[in-house]
Picture 1 (cartoon, rainbow, N blue to C red):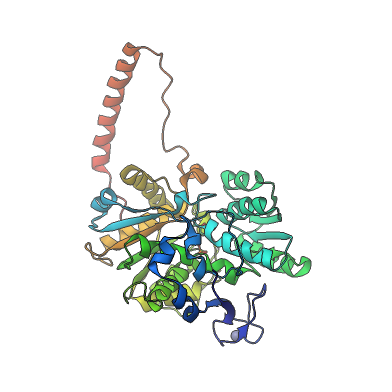
Picture 2: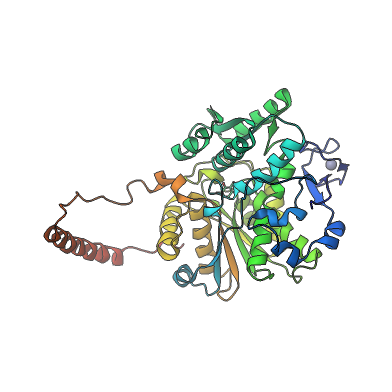
Amino acid sequence: MAAAYELRCRECGKRYANAPLSICDECFSPLEVVVDLDQARRTVTRASIAAGPSSMWRYQALLPVPDDYLPTTPAGWTPLLRAPRLAERIGARNLFVKNDAVCLPTLSFKDRVVAVALANAQAFGFDTVGCSSTGNLANAVAAQAARLGLKTYILVPADLEPAKILNTQVYGATLVRIDGNYDHVNRLCSQIADRYNWGFVNVNLRPYYAEGSKTVGFEIAEQLGWRLPDNVVVPMAGGSLIVKIRKAFRELIALGLVEEKEVRFFGAQATGCSPIAAAVKNGADAIEPQRPATIARSLAIGNPADGIYATRAIRQSGGWAEDVSDVEIVSAIQELAETEGIFTESAGGVTTAVTARLYAHGRIHPDDLTVACITGNGLKTTDVLHGAYEQHAAIRPRLGDFETYLAEREQNVGDEENELELGGAYVG
Ligand SMILES: *Cc1c(COP(=O)(O)O)cnc(C)c1O
Ligand SMILES: [Zn+2]
């Protein structure tokens, strides 16, 4: 059973029937999907959700997909893990990681948004779909469109990580590299979507796409035993994910599935592209666009579409935003891997480093139940660790050689530890 839903202007409230539209024709503000919660309240219970599939589609009744929609891609339902070893390092006592580094099918949370967007692309009759992307969205659209037999055009900034380019082309998508940054790419996609009548998941299908992010919030609440956390730390690119996790919590409260509670939202960005964090820190009501320069390419959106809504969500919730340097991002990728066995991409390094900073600065109380959202997989951004680990010369397969190797290694590790005692920790 699917939800009843329609489009509504976020600013003037004008209502629209379901269509591939993302901008209000009256006031040029973004449109958003509104799900009929009164109808959902009659059918959706904790038990009805628990009886659903082990994927984000267990929340189908709260997502904007057509009534008869039969999902083919089991995205989402990723682990929510306690992170005691990371917690100990950064001075936390009740820290969890929502691990979308292992979201299927393409190892980032973007699989969730694409699943909802493509369900609508099919309903609207598009035979060709696409997106503008900083990488993960490209992978998710290419894979899921292949499974649905849709033609796919994907536009990306030319400097994308090689793994993300390969992970798009392997599915047979047409990848168009643009000599420009994400904001240039996105503008071009709006023009293409109009001219060719294609379904661009984050342009004309954006209101539907964005609802897919609610499933991160639904899962966090259900996996905590139908409780809301005290704090959530969320990486921000366009600013949609953080807004939609908050919307998910509010919907669960409205449906009576969790107790009412104001969860604090903390936004994470890279200093080299931090227009939303800057607005939060400066108390500004508008986003000042930036020219991105960071290794966190999946977050490198200088003019974020939902930036102002993210800023408001953070402020209204009593949260905060922080940004961290590229050096801190790399250290944090290593720290999460070494403490919790989770290899995340640069965006996850941003989340981890910002989480550490928030505890260090007393913005989050050590006893609070805090969830850090890890949104992508480290195997896609191995280039950021280039040169971080040396390879020794291969040894012969003999015990004596191994013993020599071990003795030399212990000597080297001893030397390194002496050096480390002179250096500093990364938390700023
Ligand atoms: C796209 C992306 C984000 C941020 O998403 P927005 O909804 O645009 O803010 C975070 N992490 C990763 C890995 C992403 O690919
Ligand atoms: Zn309007």
